[in-house]
Image 1 (cartoon, rainbow, N blue to C red):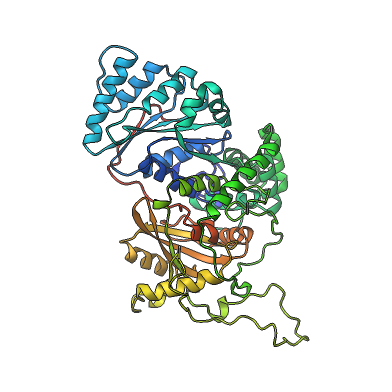
Image 2: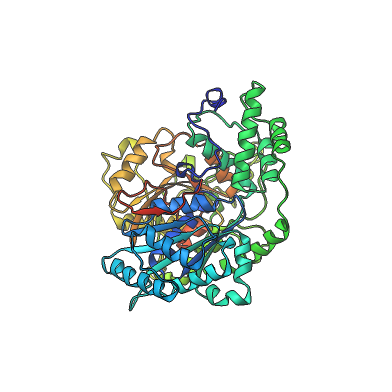
Length: 546
């Protein structure tokens, strides 16, 4: 591509074909992926993922193919126009099963016998069906029958349907009520919020090798967000055209003029019913958040003086974002809030139990008053800045959902003796007590619980980029697997966190940073864990989709 060298890029940053190294885990995409993995590996029903054209469904599907455990074999059906018998033969062909000549119940019975053998060998089969909204009615009925295949205790097939919003409409029809009743988890990929578009653009540029300052001006980002309506495919198309226009003009930053030219060239049509659907979706998300609030741990007290703020943003968005919006707030919520809540409320026994601990506050990272006192006005005794206090454990009866322990500074990590678990728990309780649910942080890394050395090495390698006083490590339990995570910073709003993320320096390749809320961590919501695919994962694709 002609503009790569001009902008210092190693590869094209805004291709519309799904490449998993460009998976954006922000805007709750990463949390949705983890919730999907949980639903597939720990549940016995049909899973549905719906989203507008270009919202990232195929990318999510590709990430699933890479991240499912080794004992899970996947069959990917990209052609929705298969007949009932063709679906059975397609599944059998991908699993290398020879079905006898016949049709209907004979084929289904033969397939069940082979699936029982696969199940007895300790393997699980997952069928991923793309473009499911376009499937004929009789094919959807065959999907329902496939979901009935089971052993004495477990389903033999896990089915995931990916489709546009029309899939939701079809499943609400009376003729589809039997299939609809078998759907145990529904996930919705809503468009990116405008505050996430800047972080998305910068993430794609960094993944493509860019190391300079912001390429897109603030006005350019606003125009891209408005014209794309938050759909990632449209964002990619506009950003690519704008970069080409800037290259042709000999400019090294994309401004409003180049984006307007890209918009004229793209000729996107508005999505019908977007505004109406957005408010309806926000109401549903609010109800879901109300459900999870009944089990969420409530912090005892929130000290505004303990807020650690990122560099101020020129204009903060006053809309409440999805992870922390109360049920009465009609503002748009990010998509995975609904999906994540569905998993957390349906199976609380395996909901993430996180342990988060902050480093004791230092003078540089402690109180940040919203309105600093003027030099001529002396501070009154009634309103002193909140001093940093040592961690004090709360009463034993107080439940702690999250335990975070402080990460040792990089320079002394090797020499310092690690604190005991009890000390880390005490520090986390103090941090949770004083941190409001509405605050946000940057998720940097996830690793297996046995990889504490990896966590220490990551913090040490990035010590020149990260302030050690703002690095925290937590432990979580997801689908029976204990994980370690590294988070960074404490920001009063999602906008501040996104601004800090956009200016974050270059980190180790293992890190795919994105923004999360304290409320989601405290309540035990699933977290995104970008990682390399496990070797030996047996994935099958009937028709690869580009």
